[in-house]
Structure formats: structure tokens, C-alpha cells
Length: 146
Image (cartoon, rainbow, N blue to C red; front, side):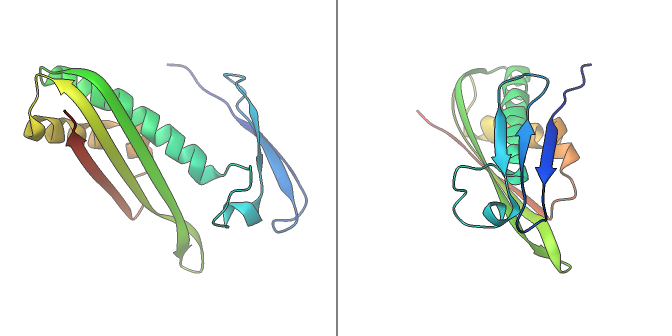
């Protein structure tokens, strides 16, 4: 299996500094990061580790769910997954306190119960979900759309 690489160049202190995250393996871009904007409600054109985790989790979950739907005898027509990653405080420091996965899908061959079962299996089996097992709470809201 491949190894993927990202690189961050950081200058300055935590509060006054900033950095650039480069997605080195894919070469799709370099993105600005800063702690004050990470901790603010408005990102102001920068990304954050939490947003990158949300991207990783939602895309991994989509792949895992597509697989689980196929195993259950269904065919996914479209899946839309949102991952909301919350940065909060724990033990006096920043901590990812919650991840909320929301999926809406159009699927042939599965009813709502079958879709929910596939979604729960995808949540448990997704490699990123497993890597994030230390997060206090990971929720899942899964529903079929007609």
C-alpha cells in the first residue's frame, strides 16, 4: 500500500506565526495555516488540521460506505457526506472533542434499515475512523433520499 505525504513549513510563535501545508504526494496545493484562525469561528482563508481531518474522514467514509452498500446487495447512485470536526478544550488544552458524520444517499436495492446498517459498518471499518478512535464522540446521521 502507498504512503502519502504532506509537509508543513512554520515560521514564528504559536500566536503570531503561520505556516503553509503542502499536499506533497498529490501536488494539488499548498494551504495557509495559523493558530489564531484555527481557534476562531471564521477561518479567513486558511485551513486547519481539523478541516483536513474532516476532508480525510468524509472521503474515507464515502469509500467505505460504497463498499458496504455493495456487500449488502445495493448500488450507490450518489452519496453526500459531511464531517464536522469540533476543536474544543480538554484537560486544559486544545482537543478534538467531536466528529459528526452526516450522510445522505440515493441507493438502489437497500431500504432505510439496510442503509443504516451499511453506514454503521462503514463508520466502524473506515481506516480514518479507526485512526480517530481517541476522539471522545463520533456520531453518525444516515438517511436515504428518494
